[in-house]
Length: 560
Image 1: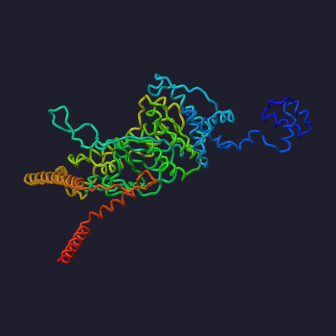
Image 2 (image 1 turned 180 degrees about the vertical axis):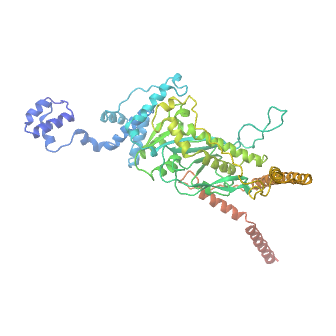
Image 3 (image 1 turned 120 degrees about the vertical axis):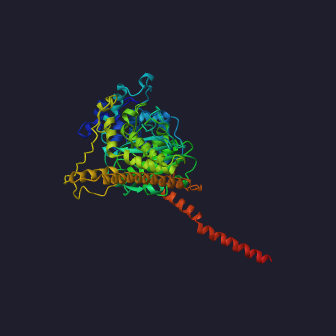
């Protein structure tokens, strides 16, 4: 057999099988083109060349297999990695095992030679005319990802969509109002503050775990807001389909006076601050580590699908490496197609923002002078979230996008307006069936219409004197006047209480954060508020003043 002859591992296995079944080594060497010495070495127990050299490789065979799967998955979802990104990810794996030496300059070449299922190909960007919105061709090409075995194997409760939305703290809604009939329009006052706040929400395509219980509490007195949400469960999924939100305020550090006095409804929320109130690369990575991964790993150790848009904070090496380490498959939406393919954009964010604007209108009716603070913003958004981020809206977004159940026809029909189910109508109240003048019909009147109804009922039974009719009319008008004054007084009381609460001086104090954690939780905010309350307590201040006066007198006596 000539030296340097090439053979495959498959040929070697066939030759060894034939020798085991009675063929001589010379015949097997001649038929399969394998040197006789190589056959004898394998018979004595030597390993294949690849396995023999594996101990000298920087990555094990299993690690390189995972890298190949990552490359193929990223290429399948439209984000093929470059040589530099592959080298960066491999370097992180090597450093995680304690090897601090950098990879050699020929490592990529060796990796591709050892893994023929991956090769270097030319990347081609989409033409600009194909990225003018969500075209049929782009959607069809992108939907092929949903039929990949690695995606189809993921159950619906472990398919998630994450996105950010922004809200202006003082922006209400335009709409029809009442005013003078001599003018075509009326100007509406708007609360002065216009700080930008980012909310990060994440929803799954199906229920996971028992429902969390929600209710409403009337907190109208001091805050002027009714229907405050209370939360009574430790489940992390909102109604079984949403994770706790991340609120990003504009600022350098979180301040305790940004938060309301009642904090129970914010128990599972996460908070952070950035200079512009926007999502940054570090905040996106910390959201993944401190919010998303801890919640899903409490439910499954299997693969999880995370659908995100193409924002730069989602495509950093750190973000993708963290997903790779935690068995999270990233699926990027095509550019300019989130309004068609993103469940949160289809039927979740719009009702949440509409409910938020309605809450602002209620606040404006109580107080149009003091600016809207972040504490009131959190209260308004909490109620808006309870009204808009419902299981029905979330599942409707997944169905409308065609992502679950997987249905390509849904996004292709999104340009048409679909009529929803008819709104339920309130049934009309039936009148009393009792005879005129009976006990059911002669109830205590509270307005003039009820007084007039009593007069009509009495008139059917017997003659009512004119003087009595006039007396009843005065009683009705008096009731209406008192009702009007009572309503105005109640509204004025709410306005004054709300203004008093908003104008109360607040002391600035930085909230202490855990240096290993990026987000601030409610327990830290409550601790800071308690320290502030103790510092501002009049009793403790008076005691401190008395101690200072006593020490001053003692010093004066000693000097004398």
